[in-house]
Length: 404
Ligand code: ADP
Image 1 (cartoon, rainbow, N blue to C red):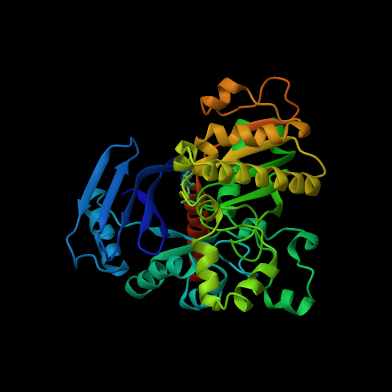
Image 2: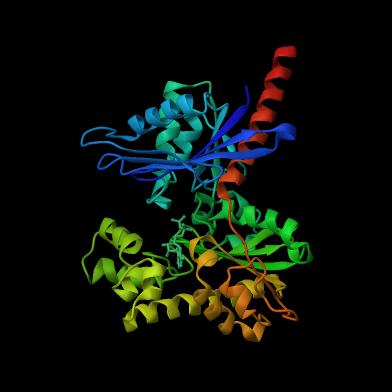
């Protein structure tokens, strides 16, 4: 029977998953991609095969699939029926690995408890990411689960990039500039080796522009600086998060507006960013289609801040050879890329109008000093690779132990 790796990305009311088959030479082939959304409200299960053909489209009535455990049951039953197998390992996306987890980790109850301590640093994600891990640990304790972190790729940052200008006792406690979207940047660093070897060993700024957005400075494929810090609130403005903010504003909200810490947290994660600026939407598609001046302002603000952070990251890299756009907005919004490139023409970025409009891979024009690319990110494949590598190492270790 073929081996398969399941990749899980769990949110507050959804599980996104992908199934990879392990082929010859440990090549990973995507077999299925899907999600169960609306868990607890209006559950809906959708999955497509590698060709994009719909293989399941199922809804449940009220009261059914009421929680994550039910949703996991449905997923396992479907995998058994459709693929005829249960995965040999599960790889999970976990947003925060804190200071300790610099590599993907084999999950145990102890590891999950440690990771739960970082929940306040990623309130939108961490506990949701950990919930399915706990359920599987309880039900199938011997199934290998691997936690893959959005922070790990940045953990090699030099000390200068890792610190805030605050007394060191807080740093020792874990108050550090972690950076996020590391699984995406790792995927891009790998793609660069294949599609753009001329810059893969150079100085590249990557803009991951999705509903969460950040930027990363890659030096020879390694992250040396990020726009995000302690939490995923910092850096660029996002769909509903403000990005970089004077900490005095938080004090103002607490003291002058009488908001509680929880209210401030909710405000900063849900009511700011493009949504707060435009009053129209957090979705860039809607903002680009809107005739409201505030929608245009929000897009201008977004691209202005991307250009500002490019300056910062280029300074960390001491120059720039390449620029990459990725994620939902980066891969699909030529108007956003055009606006960013216009603001960065002084750095030597010149786009080909046609290549940009057609979402081509290389969008800089011939002779542009900085090569500019649009690369699809594949965080799930990155997780599957880590999971398979960990599985192989784990199996080798078990054999060693048995022999000893
Ligand atoms: P995440 O994985 O963080 O939820 P994605 O990387 O899928 O986010 O990006 C989602 C965002 O991408 C949407 O909110 C939307 O603003 C933007 N997006 C997707 N498609 C387009 C498009 N064709 N044009 C402009 N923006 C788009």
